[in-house]
Amino acid sequence: MPVKSLNIDLLPVLRKIPFVKKGLLTSTTVGAYKSVFKGRGLEFAGYRPYSTTDDASLIDWKATARTGDVLVREYIEERNLNIIFLFDVSDSMLFGSTDKLKAEYAAELVASLSYTMLEAGDNTGMVLFTDRITAKLYPNRGRQQYYAISKILTNPGFYGGRLDITQAAKYVLTTLKENSVVILVSDFINFNDTWEKYLKFMSAKFEIIGIMIKDPRDLTLPKDVGQVVIQDPYSDKQLLIEPELIKKTYEALVKKQIDEVKEKFLILNEDIFMIETNESFIKPLMTFFRKRAYKK
Image (tube, rainbow, N blue to C red; front, side):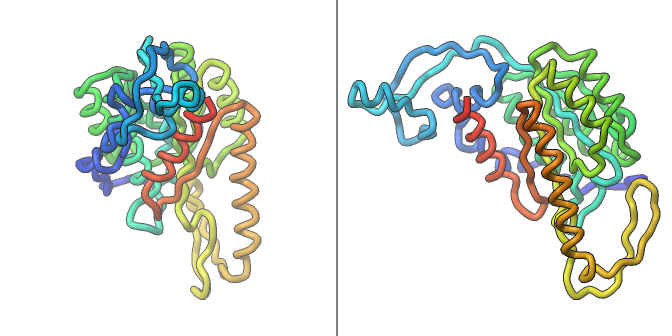
């Protein structure tokens, strides 16, 4: 479906991502961000006393117990990462029952994380895709790269279409260096054999992180609304339903589909997490990345 305009607000990006706001990218807390990625090369530089501005997850408890002082590990960065967002902008992402379409919400999330990663000195890029690549930007660094990312994300001409990951996956497989990080952003509604095949290919070469974007109506149907007409975003076929009658069946099928997608990532030892468009993405992002840093 053609998109005439987008409700994407990138101006308050610094307020939307607390990695920057809380100083998570300063030299004193570099480990909290860097340790999130498997491919990140870090060299242990030593210890320093803990301060109240530090993230408590950086405390080295063994060294603290040994010395009697609360100590934090410091790292020296060995190399920069190549990070690319593989962003599904197909028709199913152009749905929304809140004040943001899934694609609009996801675009703000991608912009926020991109800014954070560029601030950390990482090379950051993106691929917008439907059943073709609608826009691409090879990973690079610096302020101009963020301007280029913002320009792509806010262009409605890049959004809408049928879904097939093939072309986008082939692009990253043939152009990105090994040990790059691919962050796959999608609602995963049309996850099929093609998705699974290329996910395996990419996982063998890159570190993959999945971010599943869901609208509340993706997960459950409303009550007491009578009969409604629903439409398949890819075929435009319409169906008259009575939500109250199929609510439980619908929710069970949705849960099964989400669990199956998560299982695909788990089998490949890759991470995926879900965010709903009726909540701020700040807390889920922070929770997810802190868990990853802790695991590593």
